[in-house]
Image (cartoon, rainbow over all chains, first blue to last red; front, side):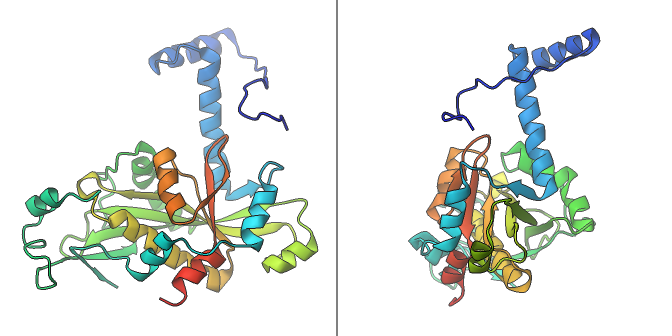
Length: 98
Length: 198
């Protein structure tokens, strides 16, 4: 785990055929993304996120494990906004049928 | 943001008076019925949320992977005013010890069940009138009763941007991490404290 996780200094090297590379460059241009590696990174992150969300599974990582258990073991009291929401959810002008 | 002018233009009868004698728009929150609800016209301003309703919601419902709930009027039940989804989700932790698992009363040693508030959106023409709050209330109330039936120690959500994150933070959602995407969590016990003596 890097100490500054927001710095982009981790590298992944990927090999493509010439035709694949040309095709991806064409797509990057169509998406108005000049930087090919940024385009590949954006697409990879988007697709990683959808795979993870559809899997229904998240892995606890070192950078948020403590926070996760702190929240669950010592849950904060509801905020005023949450109490107000629970007590009075239906906005003016509407009638909720249940 | 409420706009009195907009409300007056769209629903003259609803806001003809500020007391309870004025007619109010009757609404319902119901499970998605793919043969009834118009999923194609929905536009909330977030492409991913619109696309989910168009392309994924019906199939996810059919296979019970995620549940979608639709906000509609009684008079025009096919028009989608807004919607949200809830899906079972689990955190896995290779380092979760037995004592912590016991304190959390989770089933199993390394799996922590939560509920994912995956999507939430209000149609553009109905925004600014408090309906997003109504859907959040419905989602949390439903999560609370789901947890009572099958177990879930928290509701999690991934806000699409900073203003969405600030919105959820007001209701007590805490940021778990903000990279590579923003993940927020609201403990079920916090929800219970607000909802159990409704």
